[in-house]
Image 1 (spheres, helix red, strand yellow):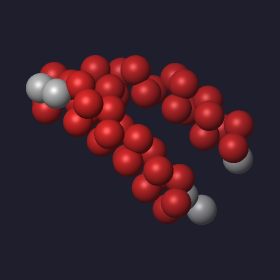
Image 2 (image 1 turned 90 degrees about the vertical axis):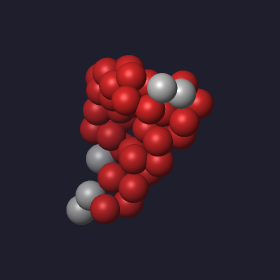
Image 3 (image 1 turned 180 degrees about the vertical axis):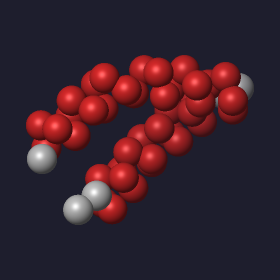
Length: 46
């Protein structure tokens, strides 16, 4: 499962980060939101 999560993060994180930067207008806040979202997703995925 860890390999799958790593692969998803590598393939999607740049696009998600770019979108969050555009929406939030703040790189640091966008990066924090990205990491928090992936953390929560990992906790909730079966």
